[in-house]
Image 1 (spheres, rainbow, N blue to C red):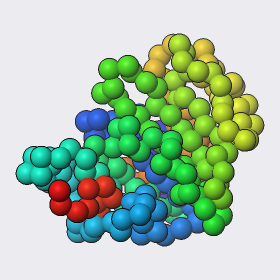
Image 2 (cartoon, rainbow, N blue to C red; image 1 turned 180 degrees about the vertical axis):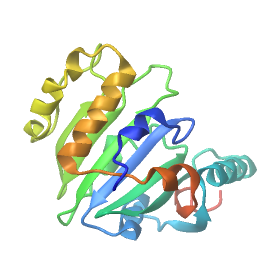
Image 3 (cartoon, one colour; image 1 turned 60 degrees about the vertical axis):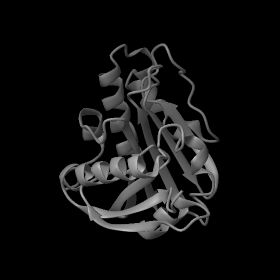
Amino acid sequence: MHDGITWIAHSNISWLGYCITLARGMEPEELVRRLAGEKAPAPLGQRTAAELERYLSQRDQERGNAGTIAVRYGAVADLAFAIADGHWPGEMDLGISDGLSQDGAHVFRLYYEKENPKLPPPTFSYFHDGRYMCGFDMYMYTWSVEITGAHPGLVKEAVLTAGIPGETERDVAHTKSLAIVENQFQLTLPRGQVLDEALPTALIRGQTAG
């Protein structure tokens, strides 16, 4: 039995919120390589979320540079996953997903800057074979009710049926929205591993000194 993803709405992935990438059609190591972009990822061994947070804080303090981003990663069912830590807000938004889904891969991004003073909503986006398929704010009330992308129909009926556009409670809308994409795209994430256990870890930004 898989954990699904609705638990994310009620858990502290990191104090900043969460930036989670799930991919179907590639191995976890390839997902990390694509997230790293032009520079190869730098392996950090196996680390828990708490260990990685301490490491990144100390590393950035020593370097005098707050630009480091790392991911803890793995696989569950037929999905690869990568959980960002470090200074990812504003750096790993939708734009970084360009090219992640090339060669027929399906890539799903769950993103929430919960410490942003503008209080943006959590968001979902789906890419396939280099194209943006669909995405929406997982809290629409007072924000955009538009479902964007080339194929909004993938989630539109479920979003409307669940009453997401008119839901005034952010946590309720967040949880219902995660349930929608979990069911629509068969998404899951191993709760125990992500929150408590050590996972393979790599730097994807700030790999070199300076």
